[in-house]
Image 1 (cartoon, rainbow, N blue to C red):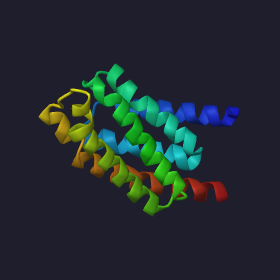
Image 2 (cartoon, rainbow, N blue to C red):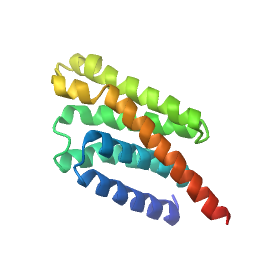
Image 3 (tube, rainbow, N blue to C red):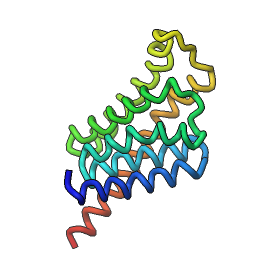
Length: 158
């Protein structure tokens, strides 16, 4: 890991933390956080996005935003899958869409099927939060990321 990688990842993580601390509705916060995951992956590299994706649910819990700790590891995995699929598809729109679907399916399966395997029943409000809103925020965050990455690419070429 280079100093540049660490510095850029730290700055992008700090920005993501700022977005999380706004305590805006899920649609806004989720969109911004998902956008930051893909911006980090597209600008710094896949592992930057994965690292930030691993931190965000823990930080959300520490900020008092995430009030259901059993979901933390599932969110971490969902974020990593989102970034890995996007990066694996060369940061293209199809990778964002597939990554969004994979994250949505993973988190939906987590609240419906995985948590019960561990004897944990997800409250109805949690099930609602971790199903279709996850798909919406992943897609909207992905669109935001693709726009920002396009602008960054143009500004770096000039």
